[in-house]
Amino acid sequence: MTTPLNLSSALYLIESVATLAFACSGVVEAARRRLDAVGVVVVAGLAAFGGGTLRDVLLDRRPFFWVTHTELLWAVLLLGIAAMLFMRRRHLEPTERAMLWPDAVGMGLFAASGTQLSLQMGQPALVAVILGMVTAVFGGVLRDIVCNDVPKVFRDHRPYALFAFLGGWVLVLADALGAPPWLGLCAGAAIACTLRLLALWWDWKIPAWSGQG
Amino acid sequence: MTTPLNLSSALYLIESVATLAFACSGVVEAARRRLDAVGVVVVAGLAAFGGGTLRDVLLDRRPFFWVTHTELLWAVLLLGIAAMLFMRRRHLEPTERAMLWPDAVGMGLFAASGTQLSLQMGQPALVAVILGMVTAVFGGVLRDIVCNDVPKVFRDHRPYALFAFLGGWVLVLADALGAPPWLGLCAGAAIACTLRLLALWWDWKIPAWSGQG
Amino acid sequence: MTTPLNLSSALYLIESVATLAFACSGVVEAARRRLDAVGVVVVAGLAAFGGGTLRDVLLDRRPFFWVTHTELLWAVLLLGIAAMLFMRRRHLEPTERAMLWPDAVGMGLFAASGTQLSLQMGQPALVAVILGMVTAVFGGVLRDIVCNDVPKVFRDHRPYALFAFLGGWVLVLADALGAPPWLGLCAGAAIACTLRLLALWWDWKIPAWSGQG
Image 1: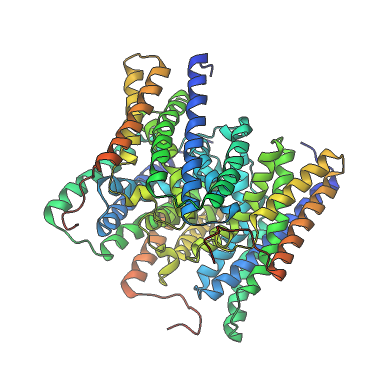
Image 2: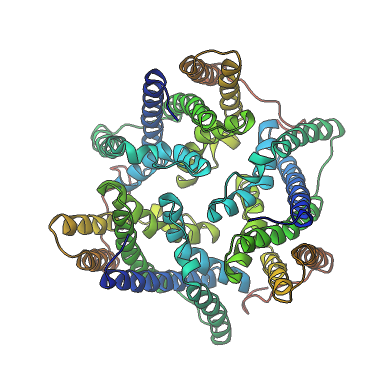
């Protein structure tokens, strides 16, 4: 499985930024719940590495991203400790909004990278898109469960998993049209992130049951 | 690992019916909780594919059932969307009972297929039976957790995991007695389903702690 | 991967004792929640085998500990049934404390064995220590989730995961100093257990957020 330099650099960059974005969302969420120092680091780590790890387990892909790139493990560990020290001193009260922005960025990037990796490993299109969605969503689900919250992906009526799903199909489409993989990757990531950010901004809702508010 | 045609057709049939039965239980449960369209599809998918996927991860078996048979992924996707459209229009109020019947069918079939696949891969009898039970139970556990409910398998005092366990031992026994595998498979599935349906019908209870109601 | 006899016996002993200790914590917790007989066995099994199984899935290590050593599966099954019969007759009311002691022992032993196994499989030090922590913590997390409780590891402000983390670094340090692996293993296990037991005894707390009690 040889991937051109362009694509593998783009993948590394996207996975790293997504990891750090989810780690930030985990730190903010842990701070909102007033977890202790260990809890902040654990929640940041689960949010950052949960989605990619589940994807790699499902794909039977080893070593994990965070085993090849232990620098990311150290980065998340230090981020958690630094944020804890900084936020304790400043008596900051992070809002839910402060956590939704990095979460949206991480979701979009992981949807694209997860789909791309699955396509590279020869998965059928629908399977690749679903694995991209799993990568995008699962870190946040773990973060919310550990914080004793109903996962936002199932509670928030603004579309979330849907945009991860759409972002994945952008890659499949780009691939079918013969576009270079890095282009599909960046397009898918950009579209998933942008749609989610717009949904947060304009408060788009998915149609729900008629009986409901 | 060559399996005779009979057995592999029986396995495909059983896994497909179990998958669709759990998907139905997921759709009903999601409708009861009034999840949005994406939630209905996600819950149906987790219920349908959760148990078999965990089994295959534990057995280190690839590709997954739903990767070889993507038609099942499409079927569950369409089922979720169709149910959503249909139920919204009719203003149906599904009851918990409506969800327990397909759940019982899926449980019994997956208990047998999970045990059979594990035996085929050379696992010891007790391990195979436990993996059958995991296959039977885990989809429903995911469905209930995502719907923010205590998993019925741990809450309902009517036996559930116990029948999956018994159904698995039927296969092991049939195998030890020299019966053809497809016969053990069908007998185990039939016994686990029937016992669960009878337990629902006659409200059988497992003995609980003395202090309890 | 040939391990000297000493080390592999020490590993077998440590994993067995840790498994049984977690099984006991599971039985006590299930009894406190007044689960039925099946629930007691399931909770004991999840607590006993959950951590090691997740570690082996992440390491892609097969067969699982409980597949090679099915005697442990039978032991936990019988333990659950025996405890159920015994406790029902005596009308015992187990306290939370009765469950924290075996939990502390299992945590310490699994932290060491998980780290050792990961190092043997060539993982980098930080990854090995994190996998040791996962082994130590995940069985208890499953036990608490199934009992419909916020996992103690995230709720209890007395350090827990932190000591599993420290215990793992003891092994890495012993390895770097050229000590024989069985010595590092025993030292790491002893230190993690002892620190946790002292933390329970003297009620040590991790610094929390300033706004908090």
